[in-house]
Image 1 (cartoon, rainbow, N blue to C red):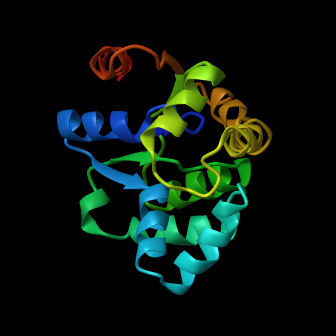
Image 2: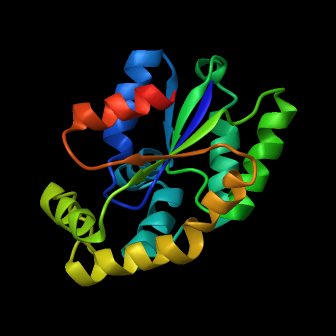
Image 3: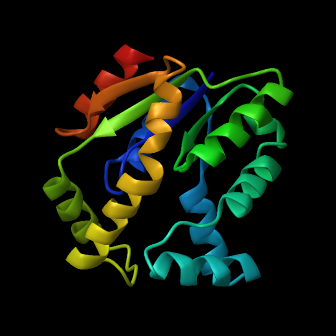
Length: 183
C-alpha cells in the first residue's frame, strides 16, 4: 500500500505519518526529514538545500525525484510506504507514478489534511524548528508557494480518483481516526 500524505506546511503530515506507519506497518519516506538530515550533517546536498529552504522556496524536481528514487530501492519499501512531503509538484507526481509503474505498483490513496491558515501559522511558529523563515511573513510565503506550486498535485491525483480530504484539526488521535476510516 502506497499512501501520499498531503497538505500545507504545519498540517500535521509528519505526526500522522508516524501513526499510519505504526498502525499499518508501512515504511515512512519524508523528504523533509531526508533534507533536514543532510542539512544537519552539512553534506553538499544539505548546504544547497538549506539555502533554498531559507529562501522559502522548493527544492528542484530533479533533485527531489532522484533522492526518492534512490531511497526507494531499499527493501524496507517493498511492502508499501507513507510518502510525506512528496510529491510536491505535478512534475514530481508524474515522475513518481512512472517510477512506481516500473516497480509494478502505484499510489493507492492521497490523504489531504485540511487545516485553516491561521492554525497552520500558529502550529509552525509554536513548534520551534528554528528555520530562519519561521516568522509570520516567512510562513505566509511558504503557504503561498504551497498554493501555487504544490496544490496542483491534488488536481492531478483527483483525476485518478485517489484524493481523500481529511479535517486536520482537533486532537492528533481524532485526526488519525479519520485517516484510518479512509484507509
